[in-house]
Image (cartoon, rainbow, N blue to C red; front, side, top):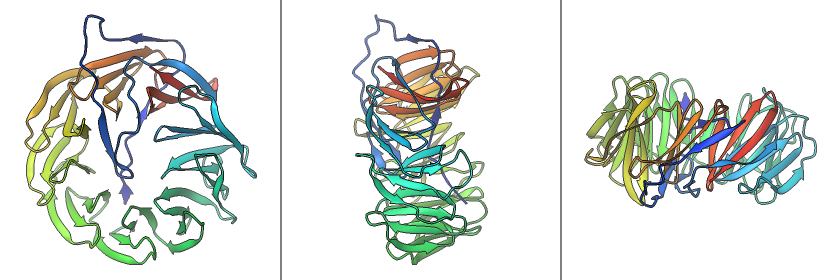
Length: 401
């Protein structure tokens, strides 16, 4: 049983760089902002887009980093800093007592977790508040921790044999589970090899369970649960477990579902996109390629992209209900990784990064750098940050427009 990961985009930013903005004779309409949907946060507009080609502005060293909602936190042993995205300077810096020489930092649910070691499990785990870096919770035991996640009013602490659900405000344990758990706003999901169950967040007692036919993935969207596996999917009510509808998805391996509006949802894989009626599961339209749902200035749209050659891909913007192309097929540079933020889709191909506007599929800007490979990119206001780990060491690089 696996949860679908959030979409990540990798970049590297090192060495010399150049920018290639659209020709000066071309005047583009004003960039329209978009909202992106994520399973953990719903619809968000977390950053200001980079309207001009970003260039390297700052660089700092660190063992590990995390970016959540534009908040950057970097760790080096017990030294933890929150970084100002505009300047690369520390907004605050704390020394965490008892930290090992090597640490890892991760974000989620508005909190950041500092853990020990480069790999494997360690009993050291401290949860920090991003506002000022003060400790929210610390593991007092000696048992190794596999993970800590903040989910709403819960801290989910995973040990080797069970998960502890703690009250986020007090650190008091609410309940434990012998199965891996993932918390949503209304319930907590647990699973084994053949069953997906949802628990009450407060008590940990089961609400309902559903059979999982083989390897499956789970999407939770507002009041619905989309359970997929073995060429099909079933939609349940999150609160009660009542089945709403089923759909056959032949040839679609590990599809995920995204909400569009109150009437429509989109099911997608890397090769196929299917729009369905949210209430009945009726197929509305489908198209080849990977579909991403965007709210363009509040108007729902589906952006589908598919590869047409080793150097190019085709993108189309659809009306989510009718499947009518709103922006016709447009050829853009290919990308092995992509992310959308505030109206721009960042596409990376080897040493080139191209920002394509969601509203009309025109190129806003592009940059090129011989070191633009194998690093993670995270959008921030007016640009992005990238994590670089090479023979010069690990460092965080800020690119701003």
